[in-house]
Image 1 (spheres, rainbow, N blue to C red):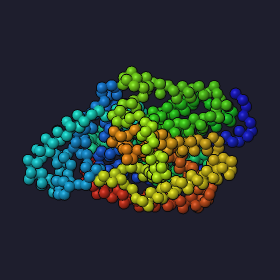
Image 2: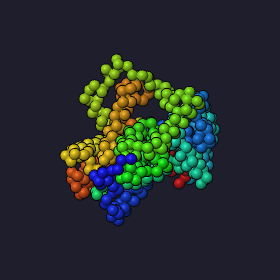
Image 3: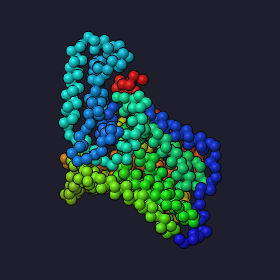
Image 4: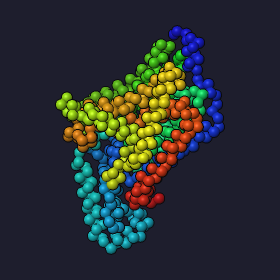
Length: 527
């Protein structure tokens, strides 16, 4: 291994800003607590199942909890998830409630003595109409059977990492006494822990990426805490990316720092870095931008500790090979993705259809960029079949994003580096940030959606930014670093304050219907 030069040693030393000030530590802790509480509150308010494929993901969590692994011909929904949906799934996601007390009650509520005990008016109606209760019992059975026959779970062959973790969490909830809707709520609360961890991981990564700038590091962590991405409150395999993304990049950067400083990383550390990258990719293949970003951060180690990277390569490739081998042997395909695209009726793209795609128009590009950026912040929940969003808050998210990235790019270029960061973290952050929308664009153009129910020929875009939410911490660091360099610490504080006010006001307004819904899980559980 070649000895590193003095210049490389100075460029790759650990953060030189010493012990963080107490106010920064308290700020990060407060941001982490806020993120966890916000996600836990939204998870408690939302009825089941959220329309972000929550029924399919919760079904898999339960199946893994019972030791049921995916296999060809065994992709039907399990009865537990179907029965829970038939009894308690709210119509409010797609349509308004009907008038009258009975119209505000889900079928399962009419048969639940514990719930009726807390609602005298509904209990009186049930006692006066026993024939209606009997009809509800028959209807629940019919709905369960209809759901059973509706077709296989199109998420059934997805990689198992998230589901194994969530299954362990689910079993812990059962041990603690949660059941029925309460057990779904407990599983949702896993997202609150992920959100808090993502805040801390972002702050730690920003310490390396923007050395000497505590405001920028704290600002990035607070932006991650404020992001009202609603998928974090759902049972969904998109959740883990926002935590694993910055952790993978931090691990890769630390590995390169050690290698470039002449401290050859041990094989177990290299193996751990590789395993973390593999887990990130296997949680969700669309986390690929952050896997690529971590590989960029690892690049200097190729020159300084080439042989030490062998365990890293083993750690990265072995889980992927094992999963692909399992998928080929037990599911008849290499990754499990073919099963999903076929059930969602995606067809290979044709040149004739591509020529008519809105990607050829300025209006189409503006729609793609605008929807992707705003949904990266707030998510894409609907309520009464209307997407939850406000023009003014979406404008704030879009403006903050574009101005922050522009400042990071221009000020970094003037200083002959993309951001004021230790190389190659600056490049890695940009790769993770820019490759995320590039991946969504690639998917949008790769498929013909004429037979699909989503996306549609009228809207042939994948602007579901939750699919690439693992890149949000990298994006937040760039925005905070660019704003701090452009406007200073006070300017960054003002920008964060604007985002905070926007999030609190808009989310309180947008979720007011869920807060008063008789079908919120927190009410179904009798809490």
